[in-house]
Image 1 (cartoon, rainbow, N blue to C red):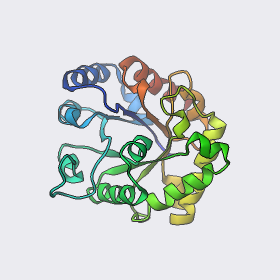
Image 2 (image 1 turned 90 degrees about the vertical axis):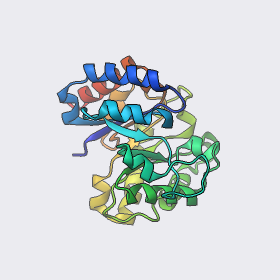
Image 3 (image 1 turned 45 degrees about the vertical axis):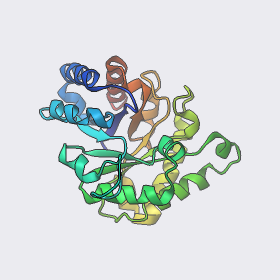
Image 4 (image 1 turned 120 degrees about the horizontal axis):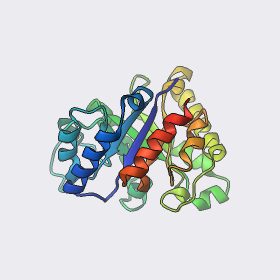
Length: 255
């Protein structure tokens, strides 16, 4: 059985002081049973990573980053290397989020390089894939996701560990959530593609998350679906109460 992963993506929210308060309060209320059944990660903005790393050293909560560049070092003004993230204790790195693809104009080649660079530093990429509303309405959502999977993993080997996050773009920050059936169907499709590329054993071991307007009210039904191995959580991870509720409700759904 795959252990679920619940990762909070804070996006461009929370400075150093807010990060400190959040983590201290979360650590006080999270118990051992949660860690037995799930992996928990938080992904603050770059400026808060260092303080978060120090606060999480005595915790089982993992540290994640929201983005990365694909070179180890060099004349790349404004970029952050995987080597730098590794040095401060980052475990997971989000790659290819729809906001990076759309706003940052990141293409498939760049995303593939980032995935490989993260793996080369012994961190775990969370590769985000997902279709836009117009693509789903045209009935080409699986073609879009298949292309993103194949291109994003083209430098990856069967032995490498990675996580996939299926995030339908039409459900990110909109309040619209894919039903467990819609999400599960696509995630089953993704697992099948991973099996075609790396073999059935790798496909069965790979965690595939759902992301897109996850809330305490809908996480249980999502997690109950056998193809959904956790969540990449945006807005609901910004408040300790809602993030903690999502975690506890997820654990409840596993019983």
